[in-house]
Length: 201
Image (cartoon, rainbow, N blue to C red; front, side, top):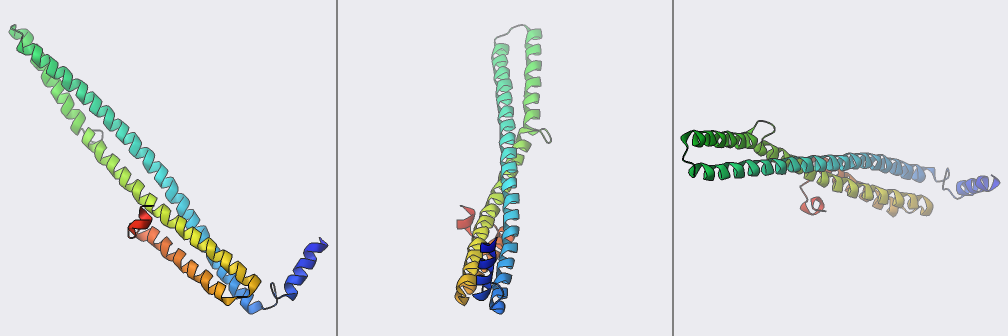
């Protein structure tokens, strides 16, 4: 316990805590602001990451449903084509009419599977593509927030070093990294595809 007290006293004497108060208070304010924006960037990043996972699962499920519809349509179409061949070789008019009735029913079923509202194959394809677009948007946002967080962290480290070294240049450099972090966070919020390099990470 006495070692901690001695360290605090030495820090006070060296101007790291209460001495050189003006400089240290400004640096502390810079660190507090950077920490605030870091927390915000981390929160936004986690939200975007969750959105990426959610939309990826949704798109995957929808494409699986789409493939199931395709398989079902292929099975029914194949059955209809096979019966059409059988009907062509049938001479009995009643059997031929029954076969044609079944072929027509299958064709209607294929049409329904393809165009049904909300659960039709085309509708599902559109929903899957929309989910993929939302996933890609969330991914682009996530990359911006991650880079923003890194910039804020570097700024905090530099500002902390400024407290120890009393170098004003480090505070300016920390502030520069903070500004870069803010720009990246703003791009993530409002224009995640504005910088293709970042969005493609």
